[in-house]
Length: 206
Ligand SMILES: [Mg+2]
Image (cartoon, rainbow, N blue to C red; front, side):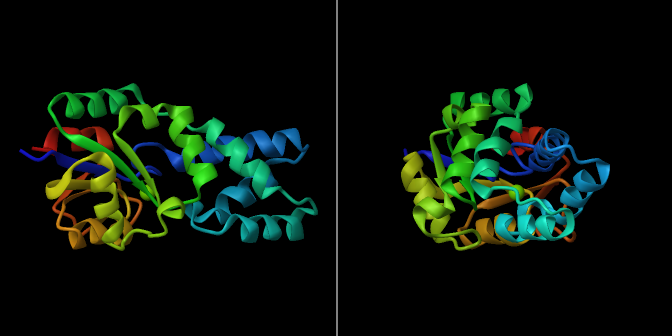
């Protein structure tokens, strides 16, 4: 019998990426001697991490006169991430039930690896598929095939859990996976299931 696969998005699915960004922005602006206006500017222009960091920090420099280093950000921001115990417990229970688990995340290797190792999620799954490392991004269904191979599983009967309809849900559907949309960050989820938090998704997977 071939192993079945569950794929998870990382940012704002397994971890509260936006919460970690706010913690980083508070820390950075406090350390640099800026006030609430600089913190609020960063949070307002972050766009859930989808705005390129070079563009975000160039805008910050225009407004506040100081350049934030992208390299330093890539090292510092992951240290502000955390994962709920219930999420690690859910991953462990799926694995104990025989599922193979993969994280499938769009992003850069340094930043995503930092978050996966800092939170311990890297050790809680069978494979981490980072778009920059494999040269394919969600929603391209090929990234899910790469994740299946890396996790030693088949796509048949597999699941994809994520917060983004265009990347996670549409991509997962294109790969033939049953999809679970987490949260209300984006409108009109066309997923097979819709839950408020990833913890609720664990109970759905069968
Ligand atoms: Mg996400």
